[in-house]
Amino acid sequence: MNDASPDPDKDPNLASAEILAPPQSIDAFFARLGSTADRLPKRLKQFANYIAANPDKVAVSTVAELAEGADVQPSAVMRFCQEMGFSGFSQMQKLFRSDYSQKWPDYATRLAKLREHGTESPSALLAEFVEVGRASLENLLTTVDPIALQQAVDVLARAETIHMIGFRRAFPVTSYLAYAFEKMDVPAVLHSGIANINMEHLIRPNDAVIAVTFAPYTEMTIDMATKARASGADIVAITDVVTSPLARLKAIQLLVSELDVGAFRALSASLSLAIALAVSVGAQRNRM
Amino acid sequence: MNDASPDPDKDPNLASAEILAPPQSIDAFFARLGSTADRLPKRLKQFANYIAANPDKVAVSTVAELAEGADVQPSAVMRFCQEMGFSGFSQMQKLFRSDYSQKWPDYATRLAKLREHGTESPSALLAEFVEVGRASLENLLTTVDPIALQQAVDVLARAETIHMIGFRRAFPVTSYLAYAFEKMDVPAVLHSGIANINMEHLIRPNDAVIAVTFAPYTEMTIDMATKARASGADIVAITDVVTSPLARLKAIQLLVSELDVGAFRALSASLSLAIALAVSVGAQRNRM
DNA sequence: ATCAAAATGGAATTTATATTCCAAATGCGG
DNA sequence: CCGCATTTGGAATATAAATTCCATTTTGAT
Image (cartoon, each protein chain N blue to C red):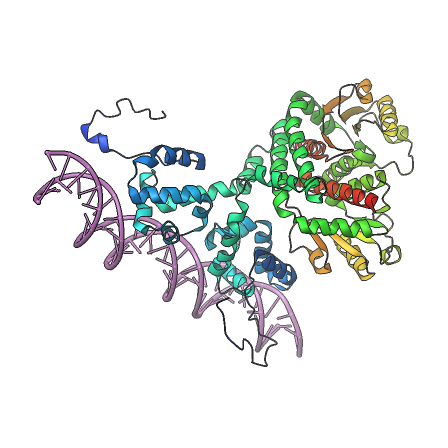
């Protein structure tokens, strides 16, 4: 197929040659496994079946653990790996490990690429943002805890007034929330921070606050959220990691880890989360 | 679990005791991380942020790899693990590995699973927006003409001052543009429309305008763009279809067709286009 | 039934990795 | 500015894992 050697077996001793290039992807690996599994001796086939059934274990287990799971000897595992074209178990495991994080495209490589082509065409940059945005969206489904999301919706639907706090990078998110709430007739206030309004007097105990901030966290957002908390309002935090300063406020945390391109991010995931939150709140309010 | 010591801390000197039971779940781990991250010294906090942002790497990396990723010493990683209550890295990694297999089901499976729970739940709605966002992004690369994009960048890079116009649904886009331009020291004005400022006096012939509007087109955006055009400024339009009212102004058109969920759209594509545009302009200005 | 070839199990060895230790650097209160 | 406690970087060590080797067993052909 891809074997381009001109005379595959001119040399009579080559008949038993098992020198193959190692599979370059998980798919290639399983393709090869499927086509050679029958020819394997008993124990090796036994192990092949095991990892066909438990492919996720390979990346995070040791030879000994896999051997025990498949009920074979560690040396059988080694022979299997070599039979499949790898130099050993470590090389095979590396493939399985890289495939996992492949979903989260190699950040360092990307950054370097951007710097290289820093002066490249706008379309290339757009393509970059599109791809990063897609990856961020995919990831969003795993970082947002459905239970926390439901709680956030409950809290916001119960609130008398919803206050939105978020500046700079987060401002597009809060301003879109404001638009959505307005359109659904949900009482909501966008704190644009223009006049340094005193939060303590504006926010009532029965209100709720949506605070949005990403590293490096905007001081004012933290301050305002802290004061809001002190006046008894519930806080829903849209932020990036659990170590965010908003964590201290016993806020309901909705986590979005957005990839950057250079110093900027596309905000796709944050916006999607925000709009889903807003629409859910609007729907739930109508039901009450 | 297997730690059955009867009196963990009979010693009264508990004040300095940092002997905590290791977290039993990923959630518990991140909860503890969130509550103690502030107290940690510099390097440890640095590492804490790294794994908060890259939790998926822990299961499949060595101490050395993580250390390099976070730009700290391997010994700092060890200290961090112990600070969090683990005996060492291996114990912590074991926790992450046990959680790992659950993440394997791919994107499509997750999406399907979320949908099953009916359109009622917020998570299902989120899944909806995520998928629509992905589709819109994909589409974006075909609807945006690379030549028009390059022209837009040229025009904006030449402009003395860049004016951004866009309200309601388009406001997140313009406000993000404003943030990006500010960060790159590009002279730009966000016309928030608060005080009905008279555009003719503000916009000079050597300026350029980015006008953003989608159907149903906001009157004020069209008006302002028209007046700006009259004073001789170039117009870059981010809009949805060629028949948009902005077409009449001989604007450079960048088309985004965003899909909606119900009455709302996620804005992913528009934001991505905007940020790519802004970064390109910033880069090109630096070259001049 | 007998031999040769292939496969297997388990121990020995090598290599990689986690962990500990300590000297140097840093930050902090007096 | 000085001394003390804390933190840090990097090398040294201990531990665990991968890999190889070889004696033993199994398989299959004659």
